[in-house]
Image (cartoon, rainbow, N blue to C red):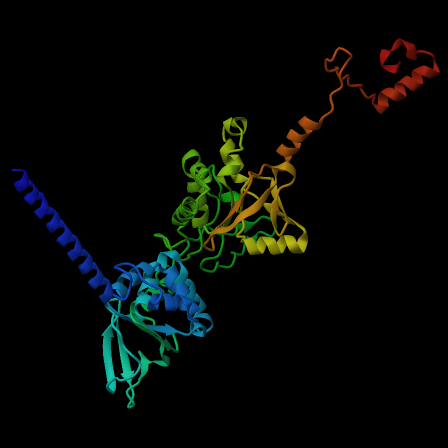
Length: 469
């Protein structure tokens, strides 16, 4: 029986050993066929690494912003690719600034991905040894095809009307890059851009009120000129703040939003999500969303055309707030109002301002307090004394309407800081027993009483009045 059992276990060991060797042989054979080191991975000799390290820096930057690296890694892992890379000048100077701004907006990520995929063919096409004529090839975008033209010498000359300046500029085992003259724009991306830019779909007719008569001249008041689409409201931002209904005029039509104006709620959600993903600003996001209604109010202000700059204290600074500072009703709102500037400022604009003017006072949404900014240690310093804060994480979120700048301290209005410092530094007069002495305020006599005492003194009657003594 022992011999039979040993035979059985010995056969099992031989079987598992054979299975393991077969698995290793299969994996090694697959890795030798695939150019990368494995599915979803690329080696240092990949065409993607060559693209990121090449002089086509603008295209490489767009690929990273479009979050296409993982998709391209999977594509390279299965077959070769051909990339038509526009030169940097075509993406810097020759490209329409409005179209480039359209591509870089986060909401147009799908259009940017479609544009970049239209420059990539999932097969290897060399720049020479091709039959004369034109051929069509499907790109990674799926619905888009590229038309390649070959001259009489058998070399690729054009792709969708764009000249190939550097055929076979970069070659690797898993792909090839051809340098082309300009950017290839698919029809679907161009239609999305035209639809967004067109003002016919967002045109609105503002209601006209009854005519107003000027009481001084008894004539009709002239109506103000119409606002341009996307312009900011005429009234100051404080007239549109809560509580109560907004007093600001109807916003001028601008891009985005279900009602054809600035979609402030979506923009506020984007910057709060950016704070959470950035890390270190969870307390600020929690106050905006859960403890106060500031997120809703900020979204409404942005929807009406106003702009905001948020000075966001990090979690370490928020942890220094005491219970007394947050226990009073409305204290979190008042603290956050002092960190909201009704202007659109970036790290560069604020630093240039303090370098030029020394000290700059920015209005805040907490009337009438202003926050003072000055240059210090190559950065921007807000406030003064112990309550100051430095610009710690610049430009966390900038979308043209909302700018978020991270600071390393919580700012308080100067009046509150001065009162706290005065209470600390105020000298206290004490008696010999150690108890604080009672301060007696001496009443000051008025001029009429002094004149009366002088007249009574001339006749010798001033001794009867205690006020004259």
